Structure formats: C-alpha cells, structure tokens
Amino acid sequence: MTQRVELATVLDRLAVDELVTGYAVAVDDGDWAAYRALFAPGGRADYRAAGGVEGSADEITSWMSSTMELFPMRQHLIVNRLVRFDSVDREVGDTAQVQADYVNPMRFAGEGTAPDFVCGGRYAFSLVRTPGGWRLHRVTVHEKWRRTPQKAPAEA
Image (cartoon, rainbow, N blue to C red):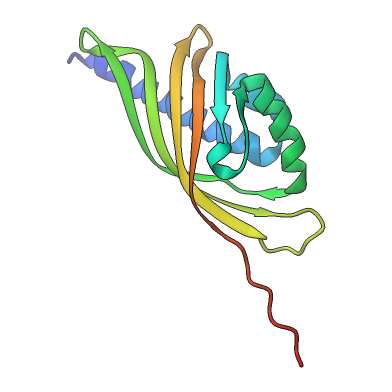
C-alpha cells in the first residue's frame, strides 16, 4: 500500500467517524434536517428491534421528529466502532460497513431530571460514498437491553 492510499484510507475513516457522530448529535439535538441530510438517496433505516419502524429516510425522519418529542433529554453514546471498507484493486472502494455499540439514556417530557430509561445495543450502518461525501445507505438498530428505573415503594 502506498502512502497516498494509506492517507486516503485515514481520511475516509475520519469522514466515516464524523458521519456516525453526526448521526448521534442530530438525533440527540432533534435536528431533523441534519438527520435527513446524513442519508444517501434511497437510504433506509430500521428501528423495529427498538420498538420503532422501518422505512425510507424521509419516512424515518418524519417518524423520529414526532416520536422524539416524547423525550426532551437524549444522549446517544456510540462506541466500539468497527469500520470495514470494501476494496477495489487494494484501494478503499465506495461502500463501507460500520458496527457500533450504543448506550442511550432518555427522559420523558414532564418527568424529573434523571433518565426514565436507558437502552443499549448495536447499530449496523451501511455507507456509500456520494459526490457529497460518505452518506448512510442503511441504518439498522439491534437493541440488546433496556432498563427502566424502579419506583420506590410507597411508605406505609
């Protein structure tokens, strides 16, 4: 591998990292225009394993914007990112797969200051290189666990 190819790979990895981080920030901030802009034409997402829906980027953006109104406090943490690029003639190609774990505390509107529940799992991101840079082709959520706080028993 030449230094030029290695540098291009590093730049691609940084761009992919920025895309995945941008995903978390857009959802947490409720910036639905930014969220939609992360997707390539024809992009889709599947949130069914976390109790959501599956659909086109436009359908998911609409669903997310209304559903997340229930949770004014969200803080995605996306970690353990495993990036795999396809290759063409030993150079990075135009598609990539990212596997990343997440932890997501959320609070219901009108509740206290602590999260009402915390969930965690794994994302599978399929990415495609576009003229505008790397974009999401498919997002699949695999929720593995969910914890809801237990109410203290009423005093007798």
